[in-house]
Image (cartoon, rainbow, N blue to C red):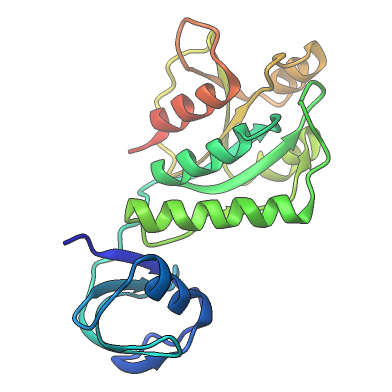
Length: 231
């Protein structure tokens, strides 16, 4: 039987034995998943704890949970920052979902000269956070990525270049061997980087990382680049 995983953050104290009254979880367990007594589930807070529980009683208003065991936390070995130029429609959602599954730790949406959109609302950021939580639950990772507000490309480079190893995804780049456990990759927009942006990369001595010999869609380039950084 499949054991479902649920991220609870800090809103629930994951004790050994307790009654749960979280309305959102109870609605999902009763109406969607139709859980019954005896069902095993995993709850994790994204910071310290992953625990396997058994539901001993459940109603529409509450569920009694007894811990079965503590679980080993599964975390990405490399701290990857994905700095991608904003795309149109649902392509950003796809990047968040697949990036989370692959192990991206920090998502940094970038406003570049040729990006498709700059009007990212707080509601859109919240949607991305929900997508990343669902992807973390599904993939089995024990943490949830951080997603920040969109940042101008130049400001992003100024902020991160002194803290992490930055690379630019490019079909003309070299096949970089990255030893640093904290690394960021810059993904250009569908129209590619402008000449002035490429000059910034050169001035800042930001190396390229090869993502293949073909011209890829931006969302594909993001996933290929991340996969090359996974240890």
